[in-house]
Structure formats: structure tokens, C-alpha cells
Image (cartoon, rainbow, N blue to C red; front, side, top):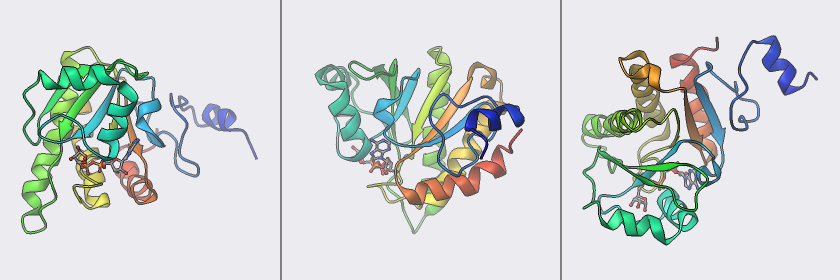
Length: 204
Ligand code: AR6
């Protein structure tokens, strides 16, 4: 079996900055990555937190980020006056290995009006990327926003995420972003991204 680094050479792919998902196409092109793991461990310019309107912490990835970042994060978040659903705010990262944290507030999935939830979820990705670009961030890792406690169906969420990231990378500020990493934690989300990523970011 050829080693992973040899495979990268053969396929002329840049190795991702983080470990690839076993069995997955590691990089769908050289600016996109997919991993399964804990977002709080990533040494990257910015990680994106799935927060709530208060920005004062909670469960899920939000809880993990606040625990790992330490008290400084909650103190800075208290100065921000919360955040609207679909919008994003940026803070320092304190004890985390990333440089910044972008806090975005995903929608609670509304099965009666899924199109409303979809617009808000896309807005989370769009506003996070725009905020990142304005702050000189070149590498960014997204958690799977809204797919946990907020109940957004995993596959639909991965489509909204990929579509919005692709639009941004193809747009006028896209060249500012060197790498976008999707961070999955549960198997259902790994499966979703493995289905969706190649549609939007075919291997180069
Ligand atoms: N690293 C990466 N992903 C994680 C981690 C982690 N350490 N922990 C969980 N996930 P959720 P939401 C994944 O519930 O659905 C909070 O209480 C998880 O598997 O964290 O947007 C907030 O304060 C899922 O795929 O966020 C809000 O009140 C994804 O992160 C509410 O939850 C998002 O799941 C937000 O709900």
C-alpha cells in the first residue's frame, strides 16, 4: 500500500494542514480540507464556533471552545452584546491554538419552513468568511453549524455549507482565503461531507 505522502505526490495534491478522514478523498482541491476531530485542537488562523444569540457559551462545540479557551473568551464575549442568527462576530482565541475565534449563530432547524433555515445557515458561512477576509484570516476551520443541538439535517447542512464556501471562493474576496477546512465530529457528518464535497470541489 503506498504511503499517504506518496499518494499526494502521485495525485499532485498538497497535503492538508490537518489529518484527513480515513478513507475519504483527503483534499477535494488544494484549498479545501475535511477532517474528523476536535476543532479546539487546530492551530489555524480562525475556528468557527456554533454559538447562540447570547454568545455567552453553551453545550456542544460552543462549550468545548469556551472550556479550552479559558476565562478570557467569555469576558470578551460579554462585551459583544450577543449576535443575530445568521450573523458572525470575531474574538481572540486565548488559550486555544488558533489565532481567532469566529462565533456564528446558526438557525434552530424549522422543518415547516426549511428555506428560512437554509437562508440563515448560508448566511452563517457567508458572514464568517467575509469577517475572516476583513481580518486578514487566510486559513479557517468550520464546525458543522446547526447540525447538533439545533437539529439541522446533516446532508442538507453540508450542501448549504459547500455551496456558500464555493460561492465565496469564486467571488471577489475569495482569493484572500488560502484554506477552508470542514471539521466533522460525528460519523453522520463525515458521510454527508464525503457525499457533498466532491460535487462542489472536484479533486484537482
Ligand atoms: N469539535 C468539532 N465539532 C464538534 C465538537 C468539537 N469539539 N463538539 C461538537 N461538535 P452543536 P448547534 C459538532 O450542538 O447545533 C450550543 O449549546 C457536533 O457534532 O455544538 O449549532 C450553543 O450554545 C455538530 O456536528 O451546535 C447553541 O445553544 C456540530 O459540532 C447550540 O448548541 C454543531 O453542534 C447550537 O447548536
